[in-house]
Length: 286
Image 1 (cartoon, one colour):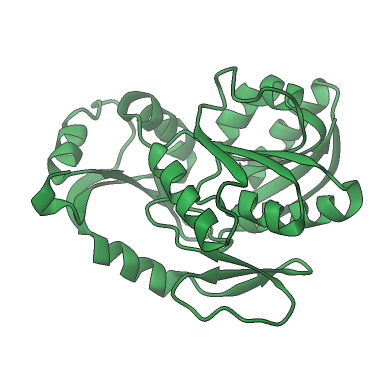
Image 2 (tube, rainbow, N blue to C red; image 1 turned 120 degrees about the vertical axis):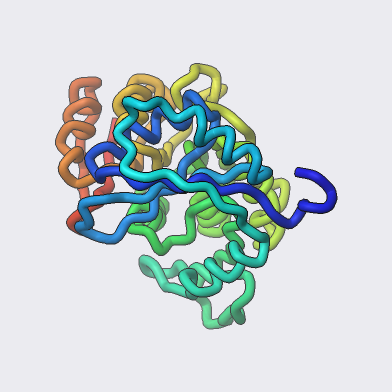
């Protein structure tokens, strides 16, 4: 990003059928080396994928590389300004209470002081605020696991804004490793950790859950809030990285059985699942 445009960037928006989101997202990750953001209304037939770049020119070049046979209904590029992103989050991201003791607070709102555990988040260009069902599921399942299993270690695969890892530390979990495919997310995670007074207590790093080497030793809990296709391919690695429990989400409800069956075939046991009619999450024990 040039100095004169350091507060702006480029955005590529794609309109696709909801049934094609996973396949097109995989192409984006492999071909463009970017993590797409899905913006979808519940039960809608079409979805929008947003891909963010350092400059408008990069977004325009990426648009030209889209294969003609990729099932995309529409594609457009636009410039976004830093204040546009901030305005988006201020409109969509509000303080919310989750589980028994957790509360997610946007950085720009007043932090309540009533005994609940406050997790202060500024998403930046990463996602994970607790507003989407998948993140909410993982946070509540993490709180329940902390109460019942008394875990000592956790791996957060696809950490996004770092919200799950920060919650784990604030719940009292001593050791957390967290990684994301997107380096922008890793930078934002460290900033969010500092906002919450847990800077240096979480090992944030860049890695690909599909590639071996993202864990040195198994952890008591592994959270993986990623897409179904990634969970299915990474299932053996995720299972080997887990001592006690996996919290899996980013799964469409119609794909829940396929994900559960894959881990059951690896010798795991489904403990529970929850969904909102479109997305679901699974609690799996090894």
